[in-house]
Amino acid sequence: MNNKNLMLRQMMIISDMVPYMKRKNIKFEKCSEKDAEIYLRENNNYYNVTSYKNNFVKYQCGKQQGKYIDLDFAYLKDLSIIDYRTRLVLFKMIIDIEHYLKIRILNTIEDIVDEDGYKIVNLYLEKDFYDEKWPKRVHESIRKKVTNEYYQKIFSKYDLDKDTKIENIPIWEFLEIITFGELINFFAFFTKYYQLEDNQYIFILREVNKLRNAVAHNSCVLSELAKKDNTHRADTLVIHYLKDCGIGKENRNTKLSNSRIRQITYTLYMFNIIVSSEGVKNNVKHDITKLFYERIILNRKYYNNNELLKSIYNYFDKIIKKNYKENSDQ
Image 1: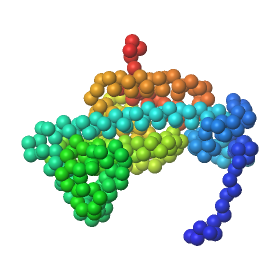
Image 2: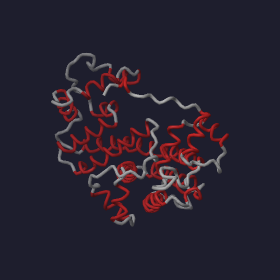
Image 3: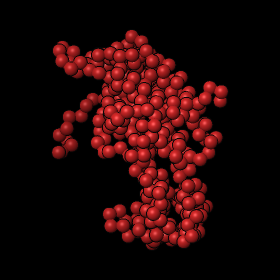
């Protein structure tokens, strides 16, 4: 298709946005039109705020077909704030998962007789250098990253400027320069090579990484919760985890068929598996409890008629009560 032949839509200015939303039957009763314009100008953009409309029901027939049944701009504003605060908590959890995954690798290395902290890294970098599909991908990533002043101090002693195979970086330095996605790939290689039980977590970690990329780029994570876009079988470990939380098969299948709900679920599971510090766990419990049982339900009346969002809240409520709810005496 020739892009030159495409009709480009005219950019909407702030004053055009409210009338456009009103034509979609988005109301301005709980949030005035003036306040909505101020919010769109000073706090968030139209694309992000209106993305949450996908969580609300439309008329399926009649004169109102395609318009929203019960949607006020205040609901969209509320969800955008909840989404932002949810992303903060999730990013904090994923950073902890990454940190403690590195610790787990280093602790495991100590117990392997044939491993000196160089062998497995050299094997991995050799595989990367000669990879048929993506040759030198990790090599190129490392070379780009060492332009950062912090990493230059650590890696100045290595020959990273030439198109040669990188060798003899100790694992404790190697883990500090690779991305989370590369860390998971290395963990998969490491656990497979040494036939470690931890290999069972690879697919879960890959889902966590997808969520990490979304929250790191401030992408909305609560905007497409009605989608059924993941048909892959859920991980057995997570299925047992959800069973233990009292979540039945039909509910599990329904919720995990949405990619974002699956990613958040996998993150909640993986955090407790990999993080070994009780202090870090208690800190996250505090954040989740405040978010879930205070901020998210602050305007619960907005969602009285939204069966989708109520069902998702109840789903995560079971997980959080079982694993994350802070004790009242803490």
